[in-house]
Amino acid sequence: MAGITWHYVLKFIITGDAGVGKSSLLIRLTDQRFLANPDPTLGVEFGSKLIEIPEEGKVIKLQCPSPSPFPSDTSITRSYYRGAAGCLLVYDVTSRKSFKNAQSWLADVREHADPHLTCILVGNKIDLCNEEGEGSSNRQREVSTDEADEWARKEGLLFLEASAKSGSNVDLAFEKASCDILHKINRGVFDDNRSPGVKLSNPTNGSVALNQASNKQGCCS
Figure 1 (cartoon, rainbow, N blue to C red):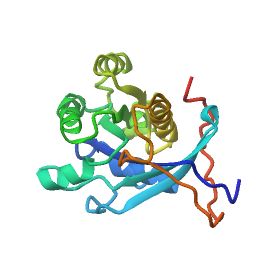
Figure 2: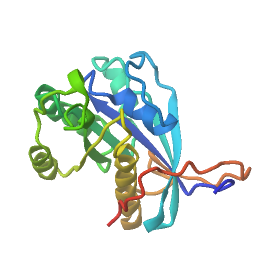
Figure 3: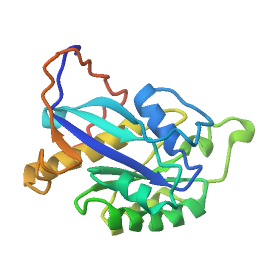
């Protein structure tokens, strides 16, 4: 689908405890590769990717600043959250502490970000506790799928589990959240092209190629 243009640009942020794999998820999304120990000072450069939402007939350009390495700096926190339409709230399924701390991260998102922002809870590192895992890489799962799903429903969040290492469900997390944002645009919740995290776009150079998502599951049903 070379030469395709996009309909919307959506800004996403990725938040959660240090070590849960935020930067690894971003690198997996944009570069389709796994970086075991990404530099925590990646900065605030934007990663981007085009995804197709067939159910909506739309092509979306995702823009994601690298997760901020300065979570205690209020001014940077506000700048990072400002204008986001979507958020990945990430925890490590082998770390109950990171799951519990997700409550505080969600509170920060709701304090600083757009009140209409779509947030998806992502349980990362499922590869570490899969039965088919290899040797010493196996870890004990500390957060069950049902527990996380119940909390997400209670808080009005989308939810899935993923692995930045294998790539499982990484694209799907962004697709599900993007689909929810499109539904909000259609309902008038987001004032398209006037909400900071949602921008209409119509490139004229025709040189943009759509990077097809590896996961073909429907996300808007």
